Length: 388
Image (tube, helix red, strand yellow):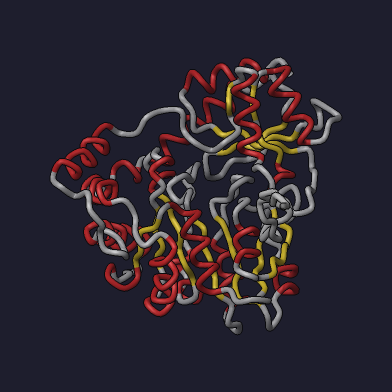
């Protein structure tokens, strides 16, 4: 009698080139070496107690069962009103606003809803690390177009050359992670003109919309009719209200696009946790928290930048987001990834190599720091970095 050996079946990976993300690796390394973690993009401070009270009130009021698939009605209405107040375009809360389980889920769902096998999707490198795996999971073909090295401005000649009859979707991100740049009005209008004769859809990733500095204004795709008509506008309550762990985001899109998005959304996550949505709806009745966010983070940026005076790091401009990039050429001959490993172990500060955001690992001797941290965290990190 033969005994059968139980063996776990094998299967071809849908994402054979994906491993553990650089953010997880660097955060673990920072913890191991007791380093100041300016790598992964999340605050180390709490949110407004009024927001916690609003969520607690919602739970105690019995809002603990499924909400509508599309999102808590009062929250969708609050989002529609905010967009109208800021950008002068009205989205219909019932048919054009959807609440999602964070912006990352929103982007995956958009791609699954729109991209068919063999469709091409243009991404602008460097880009957030979920974009390309999302495209591959949908059976699409990622087409990477580099932003201009050094300035990280869009290269419209290269974007135009990348558009083919198979192009389904273009993804843009402003304010931009990781470079901290923001798109100008001229660039948004140039994109609008470029896409006008095409049938290309747009994902406008605007999760850092309320973090723009030095008197600049966030220019949402909502503001440009030729973009708005083809765009899924993605935002994040987690980024705006310091609650990244809640994983609640939004998608605003014309009704026809929203209808297709919701077909996938309902079988992806179905809906999003109720008390957080109800609490957020109540909290958003006061616009001050998001209207004052740019000033809040600009103060942190300036504190960190001033603290780095005297270091050999060459700081790149930070026009938006809560990230600061620095050129390491005067500090080390190491490549970006090795420098970040060395920085954690020897200096006690965690950063992220910009090469991790490029498909080909393009290395331009630049690393990214996150300044969404307590003032004392930034002061300590800057003191360590001044030793470089």
